[in-house]
Length: 496
Image (cartoon, rainbow, N blue to C red; front, top):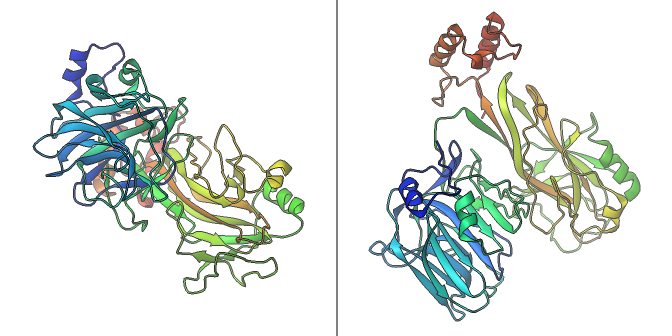
């Protein structure tokens, strides 16, 4: 069971932390200490700061600081939170590397191969280090955190993007705040998941996705990250893992896959009405990969439309390619996926970027705000919304996560985006998205990662024992109808 931390004294915090799981049943990433990292773009410079993470270190750098969470570039950095070399193992935090650096080094060495919660706060004057919610060290800096150049990126598991000071081990629940959190607040929430809407939360990575290179920022700022620099979904950097066996599966649906397009012509007002009405039932064209036929992304006048839609394979914002049609018409883009006949806890997670504005639909149902004339009048500017935002280029991409039971259905499903053209004669209207359809597949009944006869035998044993879990059709009774449904589920398997 996950410990409850609120109100627990420091001694108990230390005693419980060694074997604590930061989020029971969730996911985490495993860094190999050789070349694994997580990278995110965005502006993380803030004058008051808190960084938190759960960490199980297995290897450190032999000479330099191994990065836990850092922000900067090759020539300077704004902040670096890490662990000292192998023969030291103390927390370290410094700001303004190569810009008048200020440094604090902790007093207590971290324990190898055990989970610990680590945190640093900076209130603009004093930096404080914490281990398992207990103050480890503090030091006055009395200086501002400085920007660190156009190449600055957030790095998890490396001292800065492109460096070689890698951290080896497991990491979870990375939280970055634009406020200096009091010690009591850190203790109260460090073993509990966040909602993502907490005031001052700048980024929140809990690594609960089960597939793909995309690492979702569960805060409302949308600082989504990637497992390393490589955005190829078939190449893994840090490995995703989970605390316990699970039936969770995930399908990746992306604009670099089998996507179709439907142009929307007419005046901007007419295009807007068509987008809000939802995807059409027919008349779709296939999108083609046209790697050798890319236009220069400067001027693209109206009327100079491409003869076919294509995938721009050279530009990435969310780990997916950009689907482009032309610069004068809006368009719908859709991708399809198949769900097993029975599943639980389905969720759609991911990032999308409509250039400049878009509405997202799942099975004809809008999951983001419809567009208004005011949105059209302010194309290129973000819409500030409170739930399921879909933001315009070139800002941070949004995240959508939902577990509404009827959001996806057994069998055929579709994700569609209605993209509103900006008609700016500057850049073609287009879309990029990278979504994960995550669900609990009941075909893998014994939770061993395979669909075989042992699943069928295990289900029959549970069914014979009248386990309520075997009431697959949800009619309140465990009977032969559930067996027939499981045969169908088991035959179908778990699509990946």
